[in-house]
Amino acid sequence: MIPSILINDERLCKGIKFKNFKDAGSPASTARAHNHQGADELIVSDINASKKNKLPNFDILSKISKEIFMPLTFFGGISSISLARKCMDIGTDKIGLNTQAIENPKLIRDISRQFGSQAVVIGVDILKKNNSYYVFDHRNSSIFNNLNPFDWIKKAVRMGAGEIRVMSVANEGTLNGYDYELYFKVRSLVNVPIILEGGCGSLNDISKAFDCGIDGVALGSLLVFADNNLIKIKKHLITNNKNVRE
Image (cartoon, rainbow, N blue to C red; front, side, top):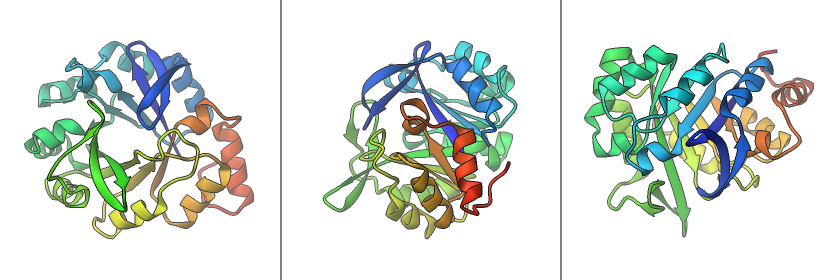
């Protein structure tokens, strides 16, 4: 179970379908709470870095890394080896690449050769529309033309990505449940760990993800805006005989 927090300048935020973001508190204190509750990992995404062509928010990253003792993946504005190295020096365990990798696929190979494939996570935001799937560009709420999401995922793994985070854009922030069909499509293509994100709204959604064999589930709104925490979620899973770390 992987809490996923979005950073908007100095604050934690959460939206629905990548829009209408609301303030959701302090990133560092939220990360501390997740750490104390036994999160397996933490994903942090700086949503402004790529959108506004800014450097990653190293100050917030540093504050978060000092509060946790679990693996940390950081997304946002990492467009070079030097920026990836600075994130690693601050405390990041895995480098998250999204639009930067689409625009410069060589970056995947460069970072994986420098730090190992296990340190490269490719984030793919996928929009389902009229039963077709598209790669979504969060910077301008458009889609990438002539880029098949499943071909892109296979290419990213061939180039050295050690993990894939699949975001269902249509489900993001809705609390309507994960897109399990999307997970199975990706699972049939690659053998690296897959994190599914977007739409988790209940404890039963997480139980179903475990039953599907999903490697990791990213949790956002369920932890931010619902009456849930990781301790409660783990108790539910243990009660239902799911194999989780206590």
